[in-house]
Image (tube, rainbow, N blue to C red; front, side, top):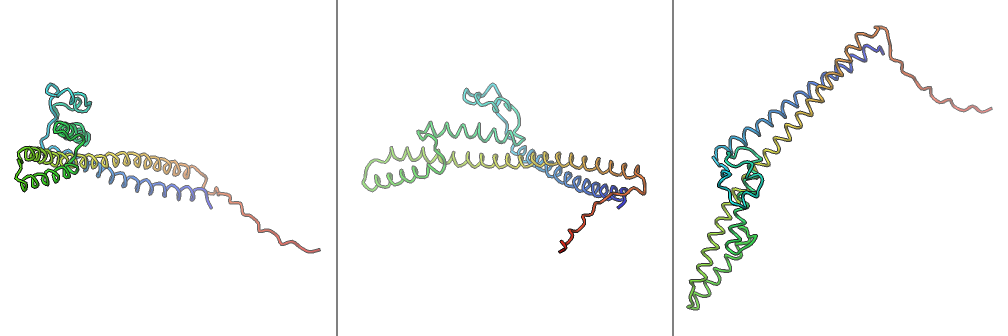
Length: 218
């Protein structure tokens, strides 16, 4: 086979691969931009702002991201994660501790709530005072409602954060694909240059292996 023909064939294949990689990179970039714009737009619609630095409590000020984002709008995946874990999560923990239920969640308070309702019914049936039990039940009801709202918002924000991470991964993948596309294009161009600087009649030597000869009997 002629060397020029082989070089041109490989170069055309390289250019086709480069074009395909370029198309893939553009698709990934489009998805990354969509994720970034969607997250920013949807979070912006919530109009949530971080507490200004001068109004942060001592505990809040101990959270680095709350200080970093103090006074700014919640408009990115990183800010969503911070607000979910270091603001909402922090205040849910504080609420549970103040009520005497350390590390409580909406789910774990369900058992406490059912137990107090049973005690209330038992006291009512026995004609005993229910004031103390009712007070405890009202406190648990209020705390569980707070937990429900806080955990729901926290979950939604973390889902948005996860979506933003997919966008960042797509952008990184697009960059890598662009690099490979550029490399393939350069190799293809180098192949074409080599093809047209090679003599037309130059051939590529293929060494053929001769089949093994049958042994002869003497």
